[in-house]
Image (cartoon, rainbow, N blue to C red; front, side, top):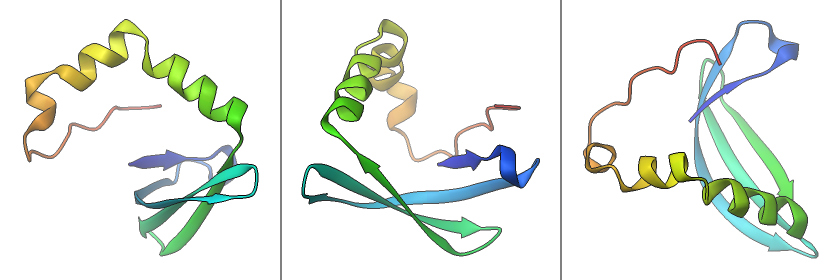
Length: 83
């Protein structure tokens, strides 16, 4: 997973989703950043946030991406460029 933030300029962070836990009315997603620093990022998702993610996941382009056989291999994905 790659991250970019307007507050970090052109710095790109590399991380992995570590866990997802319920806390009250939110799901807390834990992401371990591994490059160029070691951080633990937490994001809280409300029900409406999760509903929006589900709607976005139902888009035809996303479903095609998920079902594409080449996504299921152990290869390193190509960098998306400037995002």
